[in-house]
Length: 186
Ligand code: 5GP
Ligand code: MG
Image 1 (cartoon, helix red, strand yellow):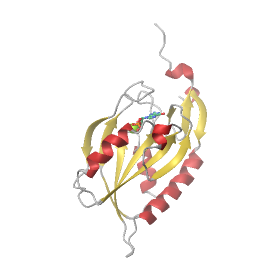
Image 2 (image 1 turned 90 degrees about the vertical axis):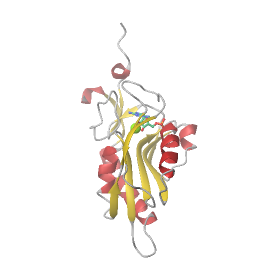
Image 3 (image 1 turned 90 degrees about the horizontal axis):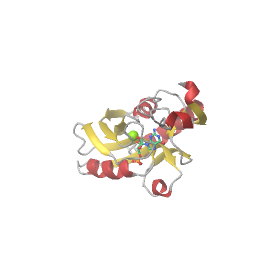
Image 4 (image 1 turned 30 degrees about the horizontal axis):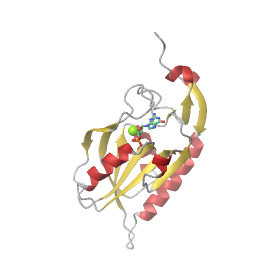
């Protein structure tokens, strides 16, 4: 698996440092004048599960967790096939402060679909945090509140991101060798 890596774009140390900064900023932004903080974290599965697990452990506040499963790059796709909400387990989010987490902002299609769905459920607020944002105008034009890293417009895996459901467990953000992502000719 490690032989499939082409380049490391973001190291585990860079991710760890940035997650701590984001956790502090998000906590500050959600703390009331009375010093209370209450957040419902909603990671978009499967990609944002690693981000969620690391981020929440730097946020010692009153927190609930809701889940949404969205598929946009099924199987061996390298470009979005349109995002589909496959399921959710949100509980009652009415009146709650939602922090939606996604692994990467690419075409913005996922957020354009999911954010309005959440807003229809009457939360007190919805903020969005993405670990990565690609260098594409559609991504930059999509409103988000927190961005971990801006990266080049390349297909990446690791730290939750997959190719054909593999490589999510790599601790860094990497690109794959062409031979790995190119379908073998018949
Ligand atoms: P968008 O809906 O913004 O086009 O893309 C968001 C979703 O597409 C991400 O949550 C992720 O699942 C998938 N995606 C976008 N770019 C990449 C990429 O470079 N690598 C991987 N593995 N998934 C990506
Ligand atoms: Mg995803």
